[in-house]
View (cartoon, rainbow, N blue to C red):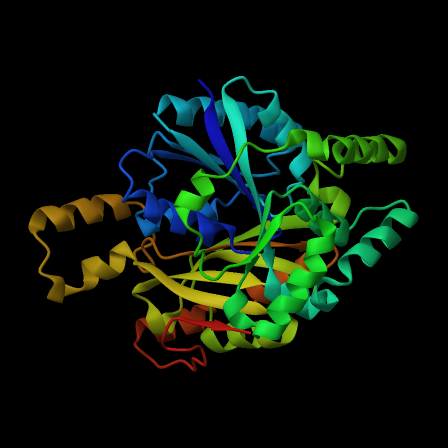
Amino acid sequence: MQTPVTILNGFLGAGKTTLLQSLLVQARTLPQVRLGVIVNEMSTLDVDGAVLDTSEVISRRDPRFAAIPAGSISGPRGLAAFAAAVEKVTAGGATHILIETSGSTHPWPLLEAIRTHAALRLHGFLSVVDTLVLAQDHDLGRAILPAASQALATGQRGIANLLAEQIMFASRILLSKMDKVSPETLRAVAQAVHPINPFADVMGMQWGNVRLADVLALPPYDHARVAMLGAELMDWDRQHGTRSMASAGDYRIDSLVIEDPRPFHPQRLWDVYTHSLGTGIHRSKGFFWLPTRDRLQLLWNQTAGSIGLEIVNYWKIALLEDDSLNLLPEERAEMRSRLRGLSPDFGDRRCRLTVIGNRDEIGAFATALRACFCTPGEVAAWKAGEAFDDPWPTATATLG
């Protein structure tokens, strides 16, 4: 018996994880549905898996969860890991599998892997398209096909080609972040996207508001419809000696990870966001803390020119330091054991971010971010309870 599969594909920061969370929450009301989840991240830092962990919709320790970090699921290593991930989640009792791909993933190799897998049957291929990014950076989506054609004419495949091809293979196109644009802009983007794949439904989406019942009811994927396109792309790769369908490097996309136990200085971080965030920085995400909010584990979530800040948890050391919580001695002992060996000042607090973008630009942006870490003098000021300039919103907000 084959397990049905739905792919959540789309470019970096389009809203795939938000959609995945929404579908998992809805599954709680359907006892007959046991969703398996496979999450793929380009970076070695498994931020999406950690976000799902803290959201309590599914745990990384769940037998129906598998993560494939550090590369595209469509590459040779990713496809090998995919086979093991499928075995894990199906053995865990999944009745339907959701696959969230990394933003740099080309659909075709994964589609072929599912088509030839005896235990799987693909139903939905949902392409999540960032309406705001298309409106701001791609002339409402109208520039995608001309830019893709121009790249092919010069013997290259760029970001526009990846965007176009992610749409071409879709069985349903979801225009995310529709709440951030006007109805007229949403309509214009939909009209530009539809001719790229006239066989797929185009729907607006905000905060992952797609009905799980509709996703589960999608018909089997029409592999025959895309077979010629897949063959043409493979021929193009062979003729040009590239691995564009498997490697983000052929799109000049790279990633790096920034890790440090120190907090970011709030004002310097604000200045970097407002002055140093170039158009080549497609995505940065991860966890961080500020000396002005040292109890809170914050999520940094940047896509193009927008940054969302969310509170995802409390640091364990902050809970241990808070006498008002009236923790039991056993609870305090357990927390101390988890913090053993860590910095006596910072404890489990630390900044861990991944930056993804054009390989010629991410280095400079990462250098600017590293300069935001508090100096020893500023750390001493924080420990002494001194004030810091903090222009960031005091409530959860999205900027941009």
